[in-house]
Length: 232
Ligand SMILES: Nc1ncnc2c1ncn2[C@@H]1O[C@H](COP(=O)(O)OP(=O)(O)OP(=O)(O)O)[C@@H](O)[C@H]1O
Ligand SMILES: [Mg+2]
Image 1 (cartoon, rainbow, N blue to C red):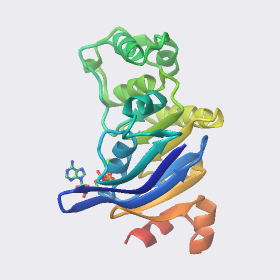
Image 2: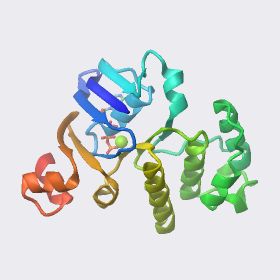
Image 3: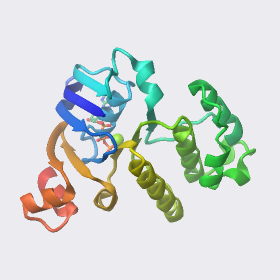
Image 4: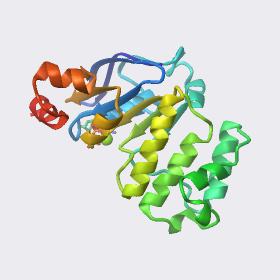
């Protein structure tokens, strides 16, 4: 469902993503790990068509993201590392706006209830805390029922109850056949959720497989030891 072939992205002399090839199946829950500056956000922006690759191919299903960016965006849901919101709108207005962009009838009220924002649905977003804003971003991302969800560090700033809720929803989506590509520094999250993980270091994919397989091959007891060993 997500195919990256020899993907590279350079910023001047920095090779942020270097010859990255990856295939992620429909319904797979893939966790993307790597130290600060490894190239995770750059890869995610390339997948979502927000950056142009220096070389390489990106496909979502049968869609070449560079050739048909609008079509790709219709089946993608993207959650960036910083909440993007129109703060002068209320959650109700913002979700209506996003629904109109995607041309869907759903007004997002059920999602607001699910993410426990309904009580504040007519308050200006600028008055919300970081975690509340992040929960509205989740609502906005799910409103068009994307087939692929791409998430950059989703849990930062969320309280334990919200983390629990987000994990539950992502697990449910994955079971329904939605493909999930999630970048995180929270290795326990990857151990709990991922069908497969990939570790990126200095732009290069240095390990890939199920957590169990990687631990066995590397003869380590946990993902943290493996991560530290590979990225030192
Ligand atoms: N717009 C840009 N211009 C120049 N360099 C950039 C740009 N965006 C990213 N980089 C560089 O590319 C490299 C990869 O950055 P990226 O943001 O992809 O890392 P990351 O793995 O997401 O890190 P973090 O865990 O800190 O979020 C870094 O060296 C960064 O400085
Ligand atoms: Mg990042």
